[in-house]
Length: 135
Image 1 (cartoon, rainbow, N blue to C red):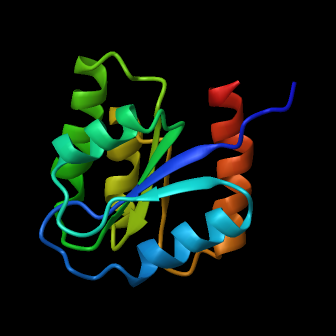
Image 2 (image 1 turned 90 degrees about the horizontal axis):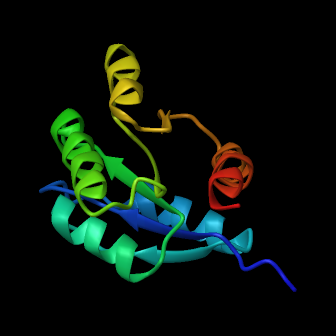
């Protein structure tokens, strides 16, 4: 029996219209053999969680540049709990102050990637960390 590839929903929550980074990460993951579902711009936390559940995703990767990361990540985590889908790993990146990262981790965000992180580092982390959660 062959192992199915990881499936990651890449999402751009909120009103931020800058999606180049999300698209670069989505493509890097896809090129590495990960199934990627890109939700597009201006997604609500509800839409993101619904897409992840419908797509049977192993993880949600959110790109947040708007400054609303604390609210958006918290809402996604809460909705996953409500939908009994806490096994979906949540990670993200964007313009997120270093001081906010420990709080995001406390609320259940598995990893935050800050500017300058290579796509290979993200791919490697997803393969190692999400693979274990999906197994």
